[in-house]
Length: 251
Image (cartoon, rainbow, N blue to C red; front, top):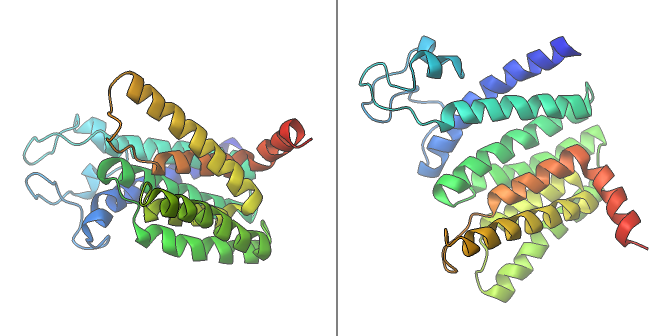
């Protein structure tokens, strides 16, 4: 088990390196494959020895080899977080058909979180294919029935559609599509628990930001990271959380 977890962790570091490319390029509509990695400050190409996840960052002391400019700390952070969450997902799901589905969802949520925090957008290029992928993957693996997945898409997206309609744009379409994607992957019951976690955590953080005056009432607070948190909780502990909720409040 330990050796398998180590392999999954190394794989997670490599995926995290790719997710950094997604976070940097998708908002700008750039290709993920060409050109190769380059310093955003001086444009110098980054060789393979300077592109090893985490290790290269510390070997270079967080500086570009060519120009000495600073390398953003988010690069090793995304790699380490991806590796850690991949290992956690493996430990929860094991070597089952659910594992690749779970890893795909985790990777998507990490990329969405990074992009939303930096640019306050949730790109359709992740969520729209993610809805289809979640539905097809569950239909093939049987983790969630096709009907539960369809209902999850309708519930996860429909709740935000109503909020957007009633509030006249109080939330974005990206949140709606992300909610639908979570429903496709998790099914409607667990998706609703995930959305509840997102609302509670997002509301709590927003309240703290307002009380500390770190944000004003009209300052936007990205909701994608909280949806990602809820989706992760639903993936890893959804059935447990659902059973607890029903047992506590469903009587």
